[in-house]
Amino acid sequence: MKCNIRPAILKDAYQIKNLINEHARKGKMLPVSINQVFEHLRDFWVINDAKNRIIGCGALKIVWKDLGEIRSLAIKNSKQKKGYGSMLVNTLIEEAKKIGINKIFVLTYTPAFFEKFGFVRIEKTKLPHKIWIDCINCPKFPRCDEVPLLRII
Image 1 (tube, helix red, strand yellow):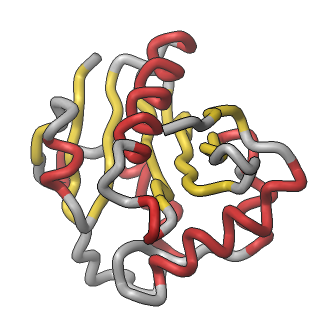
Image 2 (cartoon, one colour):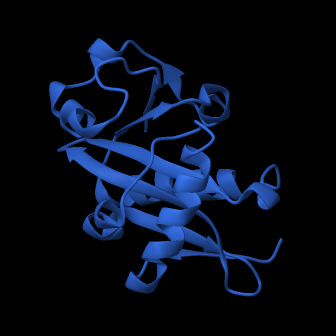
């Protein structure tokens, strides 16, 4: 499993968008526009294979003074179940620790995956109202069906 995890750079943006939207078309995550990727590029980390192709991505968004969100975690279909998603989640958790975030949440359709990392299910009402600003543009608003989970670091 030769790979490299690194912060995203500008030339990664279209691959990130395509990877996320491939999963979004199957209802596994929410779609993103190229504008959203560029606006939040500094939040993204990517994982490259031995041929330097992006096979996965994930973002760590700072939400508040002590709160972050892992979002847009996606692994190429042909590379799933090989530990790449776990590697990205662990990288994002370590990055959160480095910058002083002590609580991370996710909104996901795959809660069991995140529970392996110590995330626990919570009520949506336990999250600050500030996080719902992104939801206004969501096609599923106001009928969110993602599962919220939280991890205290």
